[in-house]
Image (cartoon, rainbow, N blue to C red):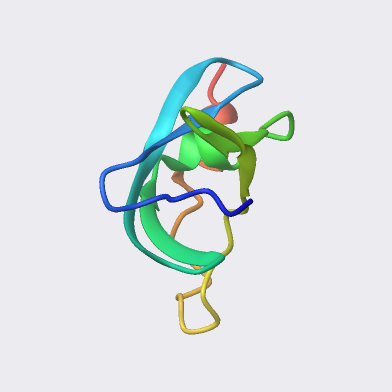
Length: 80
């Protein structure tokens, strides 16, 4: 059975219970969305679609993404 996930579906980190972002577009088993880096990149992160817990979400950086972008969460974690 294929889950129907569409724009606006909420992505949650089931480990923390926090909202991690939302789906922008989905076609078949692929989709794109906006994710909060802090939630999406946690080592304990387990991302799912709310109300579709059988749908796993994998956060990846596109190949074109500049290497220096998206490391703010690492810098913040170094502050004591």
